[in-house]
Image (cartoon, rainbow, N blue to C red; front, top):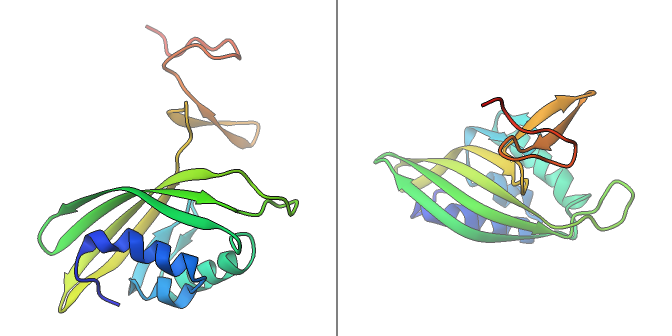
Length: 159
């Protein structure tokens, strides 16, 4: 479904999310689009994007609310990059209880073709307050901030 303006992408994505309509969500994407989720799962076409979102929207995201925050658009002519702060609440945790709210930044790359704009790529990144990177420790990633001392005694990078 081509959009008249690339700035519409975050709202249309959230609208399809709210309707639990994975087909409508996937229709925002080109047939050969890419989507990378918050943990690095990479879906390589519209069908994979639809299947992944159908699964999430009918299970652990079935009661969730996705709100659009600040949106920035960089129109490069036939291509536009859209960044949107997104706020998610109502996710169901693995134990079946409500998970806490979280924020992400969704980055969309749209291409102008014919009557409008179609998304060719999306990247969703969790916002981790108080951290600037992840560090692999003991087989898991831990958010870390090198800018100041932390409770574990780290003092940041050498001078």
